[in-house]
Length: 355
Ligand code: ADP
Image (tube, rainbow, N blue to C red; front, side, top):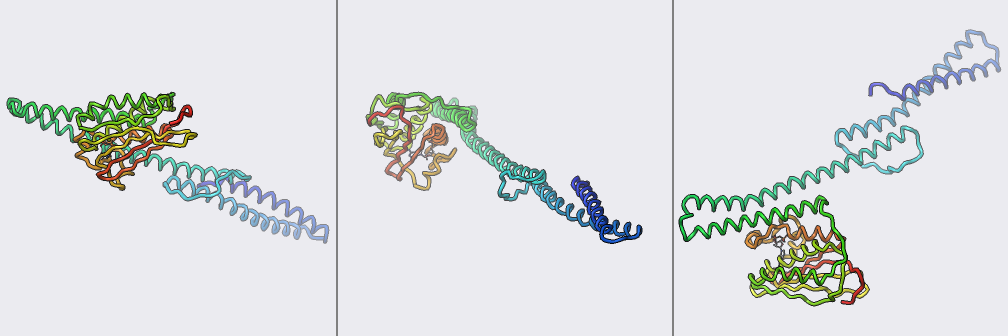
């Protein structure tokens, strides 16, 4: 700081108080004893000077101490150094107290904002890294098949169709990946808003099960619906809940074994409870406890090759988690290797109907 505004105030305070002190002192001296003019001037000067120096020093020291504190907080902000400041509530005080409080609040806010931006930046870097990695595999595979075909395999009746089908499978993978990426980015940026309606849950479950029957049959897996009240209505976004059911039932099919089963139904809850719990239970490969907490992370797969072979994008459960959270509901996962998994989530009932 080049010029201290408060030193001017201190100077003025010192001046005024010294004059006042000197006048009062001289008045007292005159009243008490007779003095010569020279003695009077001398005592006035001595009292004025010492009063001035004392009041000025104390006043400047007190103000400087507080200004230095504000200066330190602001310098720390510019160096991205943030201390832990306590008691940041507004209290009675002068302008300096107010400035000091504002500087500390600014420090706290800048620190919070920087942390938030760092988190977003890391998330962005990680997301871009994940996407490029996910895109690389199918793109290189397609490139390989096309190159081989162009190099002559196109005329080989034994392999040309096989290579084209493999290339097509990878194109499909890219399509699923793009679709899921668009969906998750809309969910994560908050662009996709839930449109809550009164939804007949039974209808939605049957719709989804019907649309997945063909896939299940191809994998030799049976889908069973454990019947529940057809009139049960829940407060939900119909399309989003459909998406949740599709992702969970599809996983139940994908990670199952031949002749396996996927069961969909409602878990019993208290009759007067405001919520119902939908479950999707499979007799599949299951997973270890350590993986359960990670499967809802983007691109986390227990068995990468199995997921890719089955057309998985690694985003299905991340999408499920986002949708369930946007509904203010909870997702629960139980699983045991070689026995199977049960995914369940809550939904809020519109009316109280017995299950
Ligand atoms: P993916 O597209 O790979 O299926 P998901 O996000 O849907 O992606 O699932 C993430 C991972 O969780 C899967 O790769 C798989 O390893 C595991 N997983 C998901 N559902 C099941 C299930 N029903 N049984 C066993 N493992 C599962």
